[in-house]
Image (cartoon, rainbow, N blue to C red; front, side, top):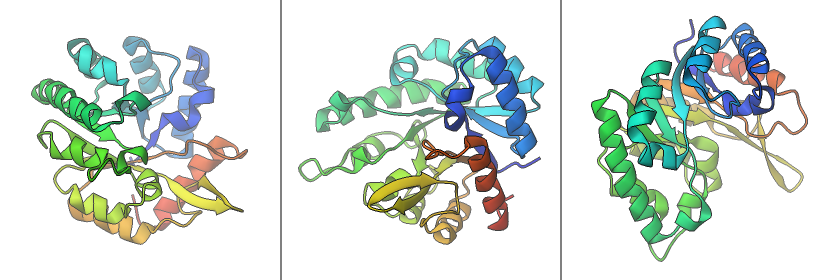
Length: 254
């Protein structure tokens, strides 16, 4: 079993709309060579059904993306779903635009810290998944600084998305090292260019500095690497996730 690399299912969201589609897609994921999946973008939301589908495909689901309000305002019910699915980590995946102010980020830090404490006591690690908007300078401070600077590292850890860190002007390897002790999981996503357009590609097919990224991840002891490709640019998403896995194996990630 590959115990390091998993797949973020959001990549295959168009093939996860019904229970039958989900069952077929999960089996394809297993056949491609993934053993672990992070849940997101699934049309099936009932934890009992989804848990069965994952197990029937021979997969493990150990992490999830869930809506901010569900995590922070329905925390106890969310914890029960996490227990049923076997999640050891959960991630806040996105923030609406109206929350992307200094006061908004400070409120996120307070609410995430409170929810994260409950999850921590239940044996689940709460993480935050960044995009690039958190790196915007808001009068001398950035959202990313508030989120991690005003929360307890035990109660809110990181799920750095290396593509979005770079898109925001940060160095992914530097940020991984900065999150030492706070980086249990990561999103591996590739950046390339087509003409003047920045595009997402299978891992290893673009311009990210994977040597430094993987070295930093090893140094801080990140346990799970989730492959994600939001947009496949007309390519078959199943072919894309296979390329990513094959390339990571060539890079020495097992």
